[in-house]
Length: 283
Length: 257
Image (cartoon, rainbow over all chains, first blue to last red; front, side, top):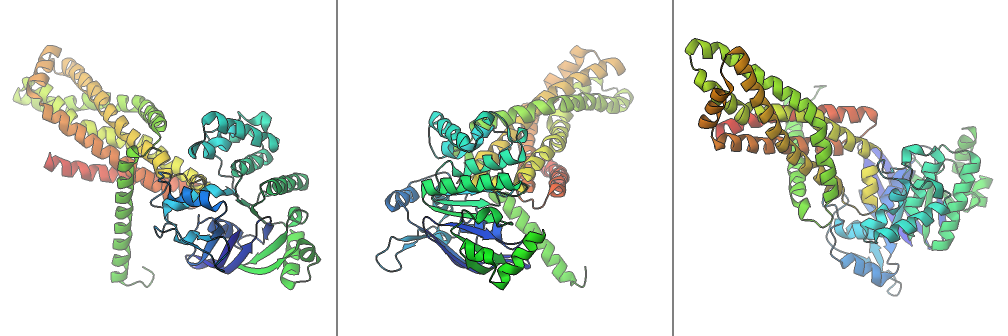
């Protein structure tokens, strides 16, 4: 579960997110849609605290709470002391109704604890952010090895993930030797290999033809079903998400303009959705 | 100043400067602590040392060879006039080991290695690769920046030694060719009058210059925002700032040791 409350992010004069609140339950696959510069990328980055909100907080379910809390308290060097998201050295958790599993407030975590919590996230970047000097297999196994998995095991798991995205024959290739679609699938494989509880995929369809988009959407949906966590997919074009999303959230100038199931969204009864779909189809 | 008051302009620049210096000092602290972390990338240190050192060897060796010859040619006029041939070996050794050697090595290094390092890090930053490291809970300074910074120190000190040997050799050759000072006389003058303190001073300067190039190039690379233009800008700023800082450090070091 992920729960964002009143998120506001300001970049200089520009307000990228304006009082955004979003609650996603386990098992939900949520599409975050909107035109360019509507705040989709900022929202995803803020949800995993790669961007620190100026206001608001992000909480995630403690998940396998015992292990995650233990993980948080385990000494680790995998931290970034200059991480601008670092604000405190405490671990915050609460049980709002006194009985539910405690929620972990990411905005109160230290860099060390945040680094540990990020193991529960999978993030694929809009511009891929693949490591140029590493092969496809090394790109995928990188995070596993850094988290302490034996090299051989990490490679096996990476191979399996590459096979799942149809890249098994490209395991030894460098990112620049792959096509745009293959690189995008590689980025997804890297984000998904650790079976993240929270998958955040930033516009995995950009630059791809409709067939490739549908293939990637099906792949994300399959992984989402298998892991059973929370998945958020940002997209400029909502079309690939209609068939797989639980609901679609429309962002407009940093605010949520609509939050609807895909069928209602497609009917465009809401004026903001109609406006957006009109623009999207025209584009 | 677009309507901004003079005081406001000064204040803004002072704040900007102190902010940059503060960021550099914090980076220095983290880089210095990094080798004690279990996640420090020793393999990356070796890889970068080889890359920085070997790649700079030809250009630095050529420059060092020319510098040795130039020093003797310039000294030649006075050597002949004053009849102090016995001092040529010492003068070349003193100048190369203590001052010209580390200075030339530092400046060549900042142009060759510092610019490349800043551009590489900036390119990674603009393509979200550094953010990608953070996304999987990996500290980019310990794994990426610190190994490069330490590799620069090791490389520049090694290049200083190699460059100094080449410079002194060409100085000796030039002295023999132009001033008719035999190699044994040149060598005797060098060995008898040059002190170990000259070598120590040059080594210390090399370490300081390498740290300056490392910190400035890493800082410029990491703090970039924008696209391809910003990458070029980071490389340019790294070279210009490093060169200025190296000369200032040389001036200060000349007074201190």
